Structures are given as structure tokens and as C-alpha cells.
Image (tube, rainbow, N blue to C red):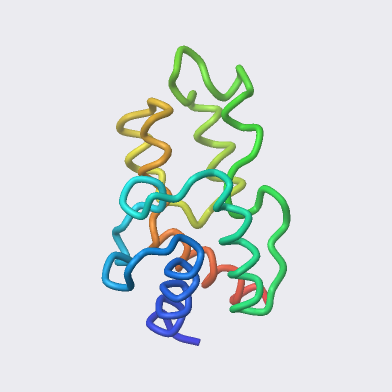
Amino acid sequence: MDRDEIFTKIQEVLVDALAVDEDEVTMTATLFGDLGAESIDVLDIAFKLEQAFGFKIAQGELFPEGVMNDPEYVAEGKVTEKGLAELQGKMPHFDLDALKDDPRLETIQNIFTVETLVRFVEHKLAKA
């Protein structure tokens, strides 16, 4: 499956899960900011990705869990170097450059893009 096919399936998943228009789902669109996803939507998106691509997504594999509540990883509203390393290790499909430049917790929502999902699926399919 090539990148365009993956993107098209993800676009369908997000249109269904988030009730957005197809033209809103671009590679650079952020899930939470541009597409209006909420934390409850994460489960639905993960489930629909599993159905669309035929693989299982372990809890915490697609989106980080617990990292943002750990004082070793977050201090004074910012992700620490150890936190960045933990995120990169758990989620190699994320582009963390923006978070490295601006480690405020608010920046994390901006790294959840459609392209992130495409890279995640590419990674999962390559391992299968």
C-alpha cells in the first residue's frame, strides 16, 4: 500500500470519526486544532484505523499515555529532555521538532497531524 492509498483511507476514517469535510483533512491538518478532535475521539480513531488497515493498536501506542503526568517528563508546564526522549522512543512516527523548539505542553497538540497518522500506519504496515 503506498502513501497516497494510506492517506485516502485515513482521510475517510477522520471524516467519519470527526464529522469533518474531506477537504479539511490535509497532511498538515492538526487533529485537535484544525479538525476539532477531543480526547474521547482518540479511541474511535484508533478503532477505525484498526478496521481500515487490519492491524491492532496497543493501548498508548498511537497517542502517549502517562508521559505528561510524570514529573520526570514534565516540569513547570514544559516537556523535559527526558520526556522528549521517552516520547520519541514510544512514538517514532511523531515529528517532535516543534516540541523540541517549544517544549510547552500546549505545543503537544500541534504534533498530532494527519501526516503523523500516515507515518504511524506506514510504520505498522512495515512491521507486519
